[in-house]
Length: 443
Ligand SMILES: [Zn+2]
Image (cartoon, rainbow, N blue to C red; front, side):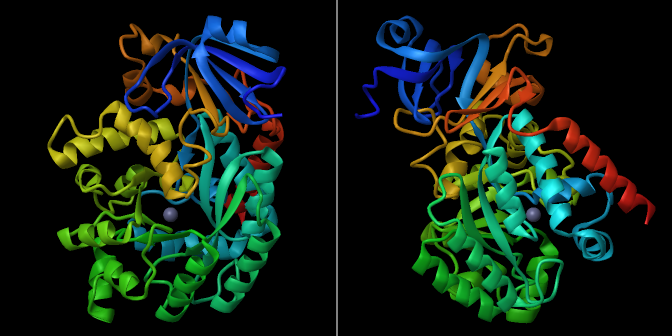
């Protein structure tokens, strides 16, 4: 039976407003999403939904706006256990003197599992349905996503040197490729290459990733042009900017996700245009580590796909993508010296459809369209801080919407219902976070 004409469908969600993201800048009123077997099968006016469909369940959200579930395209979920642990340092001091020694001491399979659960709980409660992760023990993060029924891209880390996740680059490759094989075809969890950065991975493994990524059609996520220092060091060591080096190694393509890009020349923009690589903007992490400013407006005008990420909670310090979007929109205006830069609708697109494109998932998710997965976030707009309500899209970006998320679905399955987590145990997660704090703070 075709999914467009079942006798009884799984779910109808009737809402006061819907921002589908495709078509652009559209606000639907008094419309419903009809959902069956995890997919959106129709978007119709509420009364038509009642006439047309018999359904197992109907949810009516009179004060709410439905949007595509948010996509957090860069983070290190388990680092939520280091939230607030080492603040107010520049990137290289923060990594070398604080984060890496602490990770070497503490990171284990349990650390990654518990930290990822904490991160997912926070992300789901603030409207995120899909996230891209890059951290040690990626098999633990992948299993946590499967258990929580959250969509994700899990990239396995690759460094030249030993870390909590492996002994050398061969070790990282073999573990990561086994994980990829184990999860091949999984509808929720997708595996990607995660070379940490051009300054921690040498030419040979980068060249190997470039070949394997094309052969296996696997995405690559890499921190790139995060600070001016990174560019200076690359010029000294290789005689070229990091992005040029990656291009020469064959690593840039539409499969590549370049995280940060705070240092961008006109040549760099041409390289991004030419290769189709994506930019992942992490404004709060860049501000907190004083790394620099990504020229989002200029990139978008050049036709480059820009998505958004929170980075890890240790450098943010929250995973609320709505608050990230507010920062992104304000910062884009300041950097472009143009108040029209990154409008509310454009910001929302960055956290939905652009994110899906960057992860290669835009056929599946990123907008509320017939045939796409029912990855949906509902926000209650009756809150005092949202009144009076002239423009739902503006309220979503410029007020504290993350606190007003009420429901979240991934592939039609409820992960948050009336503010309550459905697939994760919040009490248990809080207990474990407190246990880790005691261990790390007192040893
Ligand atoms: Zn990062």
